[in-house]
Image (cartoon, rainbow, N blue to C red):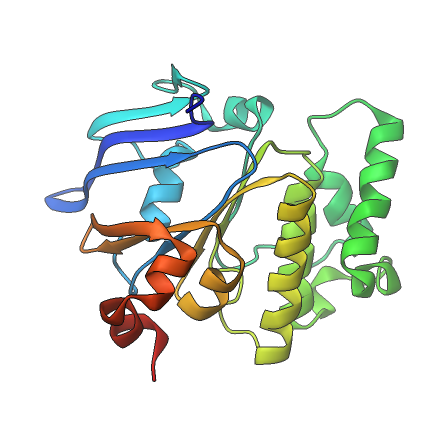
Length: 238
């Protein structure tokens, strides 16, 4: 098999005396949509934050295209093609939708490409097109989540990591967000999706890992995990 786009080898993270991640091994290949599942506090967000250099690794390796990311700062990771849509949306409330999207392309200089990607984002999320001049803080929670994802796309990442994009959304909006992620996956974007909504994540993922107390306890295809009785009992419900 080809070299993974992203690979974690024995990744450990500590917060003071607390061991948040305990030797995580994970691989993600170009074009895959991989879900990282687990209960609140399992270490899902910490995994993404370690990849993005927002928290330091205590041990282990993070590899990008086979090369170590040790010591690479967060802004450089974005230039390498690693995007991160953080939990909590974090839009600029007093800036317009259009301004938020343009900010996502701040490292780019290809004006024509930026315009093309802006139209692509508006096509993916038509509500943002309708509200392009509206202040981001006046959008609904679901619309702000769409804006956060679209802003991340404006950097034209090779890999987009998403942290709980369905959190706090009504079921209809969850379906819209997941449909957008499915479209991005079909277009060839590589996605690493952190989700507590296991049913929604497994419905669109190729593969998934399950985290418990900072350790990966299970991995497999989405179909395998959906059919696993232990996963159904713990995460999917009756």
